[in-house]
Length: 266
Image (cartoon, rainbow, N blue to C red):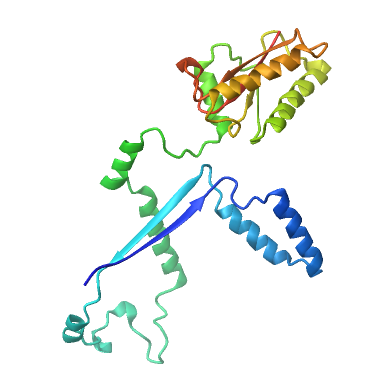
């Protein structure tokens, strides 16, 4: 007989469950037709979607394999159920038929804490997972955010970084119009604060992890268009220059873990 093998697959994504404008409009129309909103159902769906959101797109594959049942050997070698007299004292019952009161909920909690501690302190000695780590190398899922990764990289690789004056902002936008808006909103915000105007040499790092993450050429073109717009704005043309860091840059010194747009104030 063949083994019974089952394979289950699930996916995780940072934007899992996020509706498009058309889907939100359809949901609003449906709520209007129904005439009432089930708050508990909405909360359940929201929590379900949030549980499927991960830092990076991921695929989970679960493989279960069980041997075929051997009914003949089981029926011939079926053990007799233990008699009450042969049961261990831990599972003994009181004379009135109730469970032994010597086993309390505190005992169960101690056992749970003991097993939890052993799982948390157990070292990774599984050869399978060690092999996965060697195969993927640095391309493993990290718990740090894209902004933290960008900050750590800039701190180690950009000699012009000044911890006292440099600023960091980030956006999850994927669209070019929203990227333009975010960049120029940052410029306007920095220029509007008269008490803290950007100083000469100050750098503003704008982290855009989801905007053109696989195309350094397109990201550079975007920065070039921003520079062209800046030169046409009175009062800003001679105040700022732009540059980029990107994971796909040819030069290693400008190859950052996520796309970073840099504005240097003059």
